[in-house]
Length: 304
Image 1: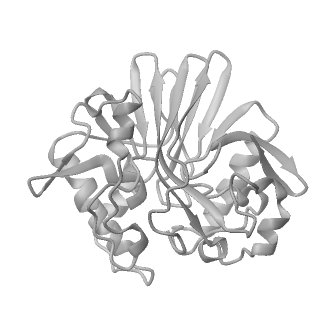
Image 2: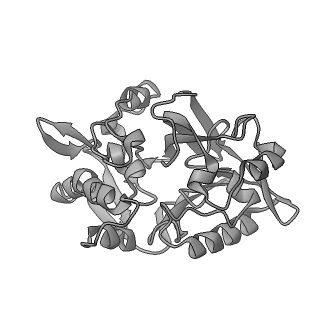
Image 3: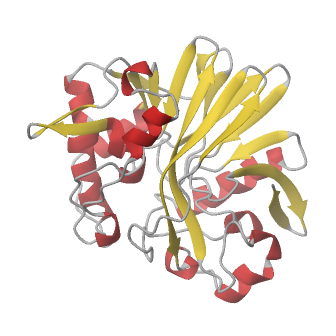
């Protein structure tokens, strides 16, 4: 993540929410500080600080952003799903040094929370950026092997085909990192026969459905949970940081596939969620991580 402080662990806590018969558990790999204008070029520290609701959970008093790398485990009746698998360990990410060669206790945290690797039914990647697929695999005797050997790995077909294709590296170097991520964290799953490619709106089980939210990446999806009249949405990266609720136009050319489409997706999704009793859980949101979207002037805020 551009402008982040490497390995700055601010909060390693486990957090849980109930949505009807479904339990959602956050497992934090690490949290870092970052310079918001570095990620969102149209942003400014002054604009960040003007949204007072962002403090203290999402920005520091100086206006630096707080961002979290975490997975979300969904326990639905008869189905256990882990959503996104963070950065992983032992990865080469030349040019993105803050995320290179990171070693964390993520798998131990996962097991301590009651989620052994062989107990997962589904591994779901909202998209295939390197910081969402890292623990898909682990290195065993020099080879990358599936971390969750009993699970099916669900990937969006459009997303998979985009990153599987050969392409020239872009100026930011993300494509080269993505090529490595694909070889280390996706191809071994294909070789093991554990991948299911899905398209469009896709129901995993009665309570959990994938919904297309493209822009940040070509086949990006969010996760809708519904049980006993209660609802939640796991965002994926439609908004890396809650400041993007107040400023829908803040996108990141460093990491967004299509900034214009990403902005349109944010506007559509948050407009649909605003002032409704739907718990919104951010895939990179720190602190409470979840809340309710409320209309605020010409945009939105998060009420935690």
